[in-house]
Length: 221
Image 1 (cartoon, rainbow, N blue to C red):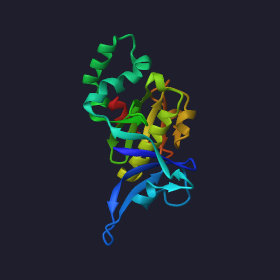
Image 2 (cartoon, helix red, strand yellow):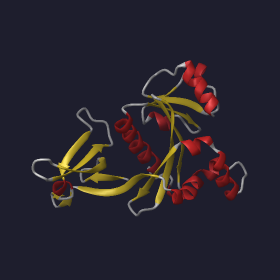
Image 3 (cartoon, rainbow, N blue to C red):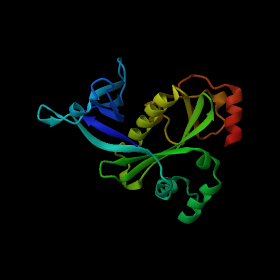
Image 4 (cartoon, helix red, strand yellow):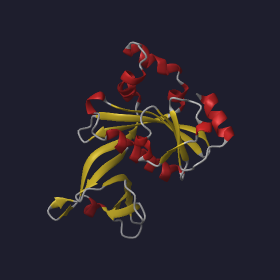
């Protein structure tokens, strides 16, 4: 589980873990920026300072947590997309359909809980090849839409993937306006690479997608 904090000046940060200084035994918090910066996005700060106050305000306030979905979370999280992908199925049949869904069975589903601990958004991360992965099933709880939770989840998961997997490219198939995903560095692929219309194929981390990669993705879906 990774915590999201808001600095008292406004920016958001993703806390990774606590570490201990080998010489002084002082505890430090390891965290990263969730915004573009020209300096390093990764930082450490003494734990006492991280959780302390500045100008009579807490330096960092918790706003949510990112986690890999637990089995007991799955039914609720999957239902976030029922109104978009239910295709006339009953809720029970919709949930049951994931038992044979390759994307669901092989992916890693991340969830966002808000500051009150409520599940508010989820997405699925799919591993295709050594340097290409996918983002799928981005959805928000119907009661919490239009509050920026999917954006916060996307930003946080992409930061995690960058640090955990070293800049792996990500592809997705947008069923909404591609403008939403361009905010996260995705670019719409050329028409010759669009094999899943009306869903727009978009790529992050590179301007090209090799034909053999596209063939693999087509077989996957």
